[in-house]
Picture 1 (cartoon, one colour):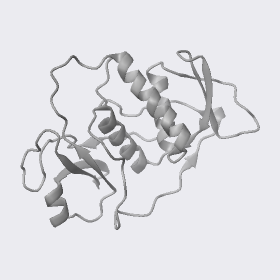
Picture 2 (cartoon, rainbow, N blue to C red; picture 1 turned 60 degrees about the vertical axis):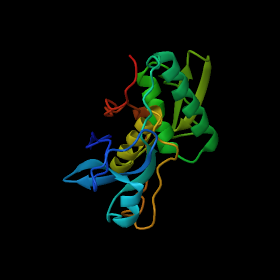
Picture 3 (spheres, rainbow, N blue to C red; picture 1 turned 90 degrees about the vertical axis):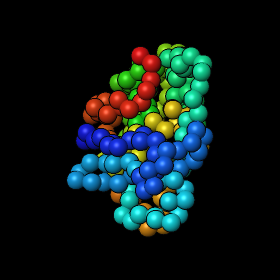
Length: 203
């Protein structure tokens, strides 16, 4: 899986009017590709309606966080959020590539581990074990393409920071058609060096 990065992420103001977003205000987060890098720009809803750009990869509605006076969320609380997302994605079965990336994040945080043994009758499956739950899981090993990697990273970042009431969506004219997703052989599963530095998670 290729390395990637997202630039200009989280400016907190409209890229057209340069007006800072108010706490709790919804805005459009838009992903572009510029010189081989993914760039996220933020538009106020008014600017988005009046000056919608062309040739973007993805757009989703985000929300400016409301400052909180309480203590920073603990590692345990973050892990609970990640596990809840994992359960939801497994049940919905609508985004196997996002479930795969989230699973690798859970492995990286030692919430789960990859098991070497898998069912030979179900190829292209990633077998996981959760020591916290003492449960095994088997999910599709769906490797997202570079564009989807950036979208998934951005969406996970938004969700974990409480800024995304809605998930990513592709409006009409939003770039090229989806590329075919590649399935990774379980015998060759390796944790890719995903750039998860933007996820502000406790160590």
